[in-house]
Length: 316
Length: 316
Image (cartoon, rainbow over all chains, first blue to last red):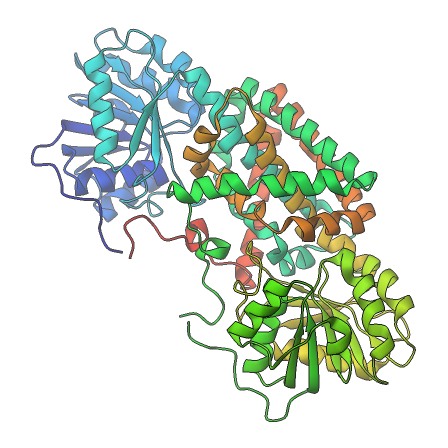
């Protein structure tokens, strides 16, 4: 892999960065922050002893703290990279030791609920700037991370009203330093956008894989063999981390149910068209969905190669 | 691309092969049949003058026929690579000129309907062996094909009862020559298996992309920007050929409605779990869907690389 992160900063943005949770996102952040010289000292904290040991082995942090509170002492930026449902508890743990002016951020896929959990427990002398990098793969854990994960992806900041503008700018600079484009929006709008671009697609993928698994007329071996017909693309998404996704759905209930309601209506209309042999409705819908893909490819969010550039059989 | 098709046959399986419809599948077949020496002469027919001209330019067939009937004269094997809804008409066109012992096959994604359309119009002196290669990409047309498309994929034969066993064996040898694994099953079972592994996944993907496009609270630009959260994987499938897919749903109505009914039930259960905050139901389902993906990777139907082996940003 050629490193195309650009040149590291001459001076780090933060003296001491604490990353809590060294999964795919947290460990990618540690790697990228070091490559780009975003922090003088990178501290890692994780509730799992196995993850802490592996992070020490990998050497992707300067310090591995025993717990989040120990790591948060003297931290200038703390980023919570834990499942959405755990953010409040971690914030409460670090709150007593945060120094004046410390910035707290997170990477949760839901923002309204994280703001509601974290904001009330932090001391007034700390700044909270919630963030969500829209990036990832289906893999989990500290070994799955890589420094270019955020490159050319969008990260969304959802600072509550009244947040210190300087703190927002420093978090923006941090994400830009990680290679990301940055947008600012309200937590409510974020949760609606992500419900349709991420949460409902994941729910549907999990669902169809489970439906297939449960069939009594079709064996699992048949599902596996003939998955190249479209099904296998859903299995990647349905291989994502179960804890993270349970928390997403529990914490973005309203927006997910709203989008799911619309999807169900649209699917019922298609189902009806199939039942009544209405080919025109089917064709018209199938013909118009190509344009969004074009936009995604043009924006560099996807490769134009067929099959996502999967290697063709026989290719080296 | 390294050619790993193996060695071409010493003697061709068929003297004269006619391929009707030179889209992704037909043009891949022409290329692979030539590489592997499966036919002495490859004849191409296509209803579109533009496609005929392009096939002549590409040089992937020995002869470009003016129409299917002209091409079918003297053919030993005719393969219909047209949308499922067009199979009956093409079969009727070639029926009068088919020579005794000629074999007719197809590549349709639905088998019950194709058998019902084609079987009655063919002369008794021809053999009909329906086939379905479970392979493809989201691209269409003669330029999109490639010789290794069928390599390590499964092709399903669904010969009607009473079909000449020798004809079945010759079609099996043809598909194996194209690099495919071959299975035989009834048309009914085929249509049920493909409904869940291919047809319903396509319908869902088309549907969610359309739902997203129609939202008034979220702009198309936002959907595109934040598509890396899962949505973009659906857009590939939803970029497939609209005519082909319209025909699939019109011609596999019963199995698709049956599978869609099950999917809807399962989705309603998940929706209910979200509404009532039932994290255990969500977690248990999300945790068990990983095993099918493992099977797909183990069987070589998918790459284990994250993100389908999409190149990471910064990678050469």
